[in-house]
Image (cartoon, rainbow, N blue to C red; front, side, top):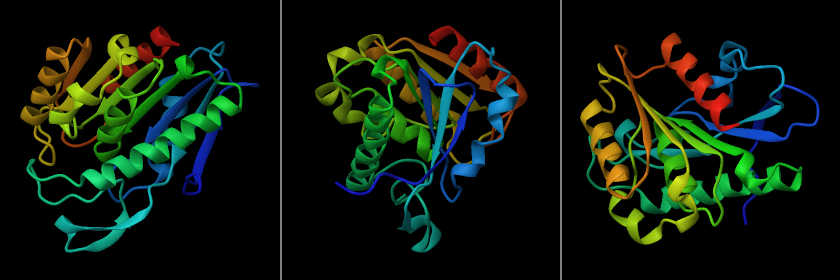
Length: 220
């Protein structure tokens, strides 16, 4: 097994009893969402360890093969062929981070997986395949990867996992139609998706941050 990913950690209180593992998007790093923690304005009673891992460097086809932080290769925009090996490798790395949180006293039902864009795809891939239910999934400006394989690979334990999906109506990178199709695919499998959309591009807005905070308070 490869080494556990390097990550930035922020704890909102002593002896955290919950964790949020938050994956950045293509070309970014763990610092990308670090500043969101105070903006969430979570209750002081919530003792959460936020973990912001750094994706490995890899060649990205749509960027001319340039090496950059990426959770998997993107072969083309808008769908089509997927880097299944890369997606599954990142799933394994997130599972290592989850195992480390468990070793530090945070049980699986107190772990949230969150991710933006590529990172959101990886947390959907990972969170719905766990042998025990996790606290929830926040999938931001993203889509469901390997969608055709989820029905056969998902775990029964994931059936009731809360899923928060949010997307910008003016997203030029991952168009909202693709996200809506992902939501529909999840709902057809019985998942209850809390859907939010905003007048924004491929980004995050203040209203979305408030909605994420409410989701975290409810599930934790």
